[in-house]
View 1 (cartoon, rainbow, N blue to C red):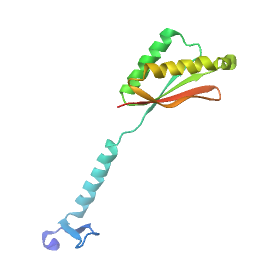
View 2 (tube, helix red, strand yellow):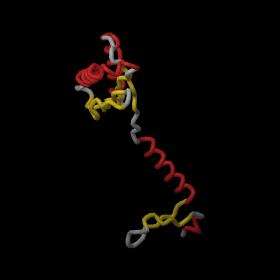
View 3 (cartoon, rainbow, N blue to C red):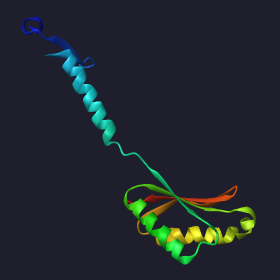
View 4 (tube, one colour):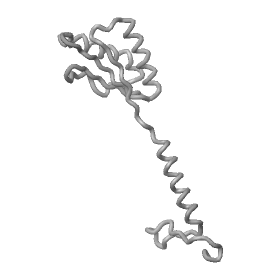
Length: 133
């Protein structure tokens, strides 16, 4: 029947008893399969990591400014990495840096959850936040 129609006999489900076959154009079948795979790949959500950098002596206005950026990033569905970078002798203000990051987490608790609490790694104190939605 396939030869009469000028098409190919394609086995669709080989594991079923009896196996399922269709009479179709094989090249078109491959093309549609590739297209479906591409669409599925495009629909998968890619996680984007945004970073916000603070200093241990960040002023109130700068904190609010960066807080607004953090809110926008989280509403867009991105993960947020907030960190305090200590330069030179500023490392003695570790407690200030931790307080700053915890304050940020407290301000964002309605739209984000803390994935990783503030942790000092070298000269950086990192905290990771993910959106709730």
